[in-house]
Image 1 (cartoon, rainbow, N blue to C red):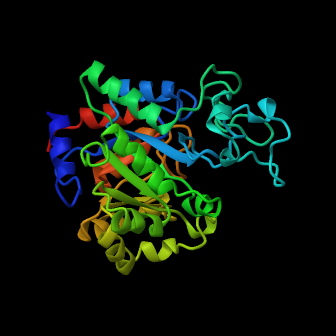
Image 2 (spheres, one colour):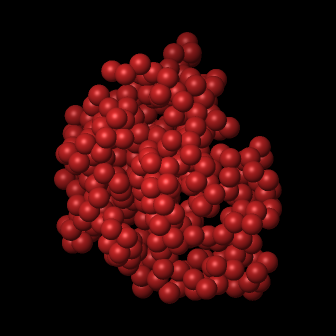
Image 3 (cartoon, helix red, strand yellow):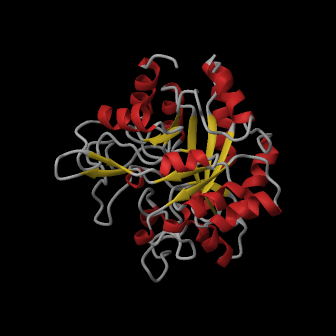
Amino acid sequence: MRALALMLCLAAAPIVAADSAPLVIAHRGASGYLPEHTLAAKALAHGMGADYLEQDVVLTRDGVPIVLHDIYLDATTDVAVRFPGRAREDGRYYAIDFDLAEIRRLEAGERRQPDGSAVYPGRFPAGPSGLGVPTLAEEITFISGLNRSRGRHSGLYIELKAPRFHRREGQDIARRVLDVLQASGYAERRDAVFLQCFDDATLRYLREDLKTTLPLIQLIADNSWGEDSKVDYDYLQSDAGLADIARYADGIGPWLMQIYRGRDEQGNIQLSDLVQRAHAAGLAVHPYTFRRDQLPPGIASFHELLDLFIGQVGVDGLFTDFPDIARDYIDAKPSP
């Protein structure tokens, strides 16, 4: 019944969850337990009951969409060992400098710091994993197979990474992604796909030029990160900015600290009104990223974090590295 309610909710517009349970979105798969964006991490997240599995997508030199969080390969693969001397002048190994045949030779692993140490030391060990970097088409086939064999539905939540960078390299990542969705039968499945991006111009291009009917999510960074110098993320959080977003997208994906503002001197939780104002504009709200091993300041436990955003703020979904904990929390709450 929960899957049917989810499908009916997404088939309608707007896609604000209202009385539906919030969506559990597996951030790069079950990345709290297995190397991010590997098929193993996606299989585990599917088994944990995630409603959606996230795919960050970049392009290879021959224009193939692959599932990788960065435009670089060095933080999560053994590219420097397999292809020494192929880095650019900045020392980074760019996915777009490698053909798919070369990408297939790489081994994916836990995310590492520049010095080789693990970003999250308590997670899967850094080093050899026996896992590879999948293409978007391969991952869709894999997830479709799990949906069939397990008799439950997990959708796709695709992020188009660095579209301006890809354009400078002569590649149209938005069109390439839609081509894969078309070939796999997902191009018009509003119940099964979200498309997200930090670049508002790319979302407008998807809606207005490429005519996609899939739900679009405007990701919101902090201006200080330098995610996209052409986008003013402070403006996008204003009433006028949210009204603009509602003209081309169906929801927003804010950083969780844009909602939770920490605690005041008396220890009281401080919240912004971003969720309420987004809902008033008809936009769903899917914040990122909820991690048991990286809690925001002033939050004592992962359960407290979930209770704040789900039980009090009322978000429509959330991105988490630990989809099993979020699933258990939501399923344990009484139905509205």
